Length: 275
Image (cartoon, rainbow, N blue to C red; front, side, top):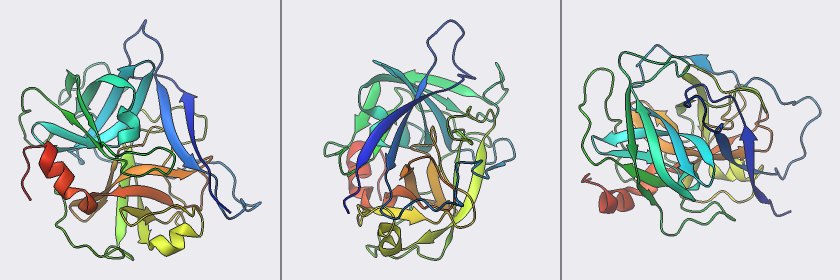
């Protein structure tokens, strides 16, 4: 059975969005699973835990403006570039990036830096129907100052092995919805989950490719709307960018990320980084 990919948009409370403006929406990629939804698996809290403020100093909260206003996540990979997914950037004309943020319901956090830019780079061969090459960049005109509260994430080296990370414990983080069709989290949440093989992941989705990496939902944690583009980290390295999951953010199902080490040449071509 061939999986079908959909784009869906969720309205949500805009905790950090300027008063008087239209409320942002979530651009969410999901896939109908090959396996039927078990009767005992229902939409519910995704089990994220609040992290210590600024303990993930590379985490970015992103408001994208265009024909609609969208919320996504990303990671700072150099003083001038934020890494995110292409499906967040398609149709956007500018991005407002929050760095050093934790509680986005607060009007003024002491360590927060907010930057607006129109320099958005989606992968030239991004394909929404198959969720291929789902990676993009946001460029700042001026570099940001790095320090304790705002810093860059380490990217992996080239290894070329599809199952290189299988069995390792990964962490995903973001401010996305923690109950399906619910509100965003005002504070940064994270959840730990084990990396599984693409073969096992394809038992659920059927479209997982070598340039993607999956984490299990068996521990009860998963990504949901608004987390797109956020970092999947193993140890101190970002091995992926949150791309898509099962419709309904159901507990027990894997989540799929774009695999960072598959795009190091592309990142090097479009940034000031050298690997």
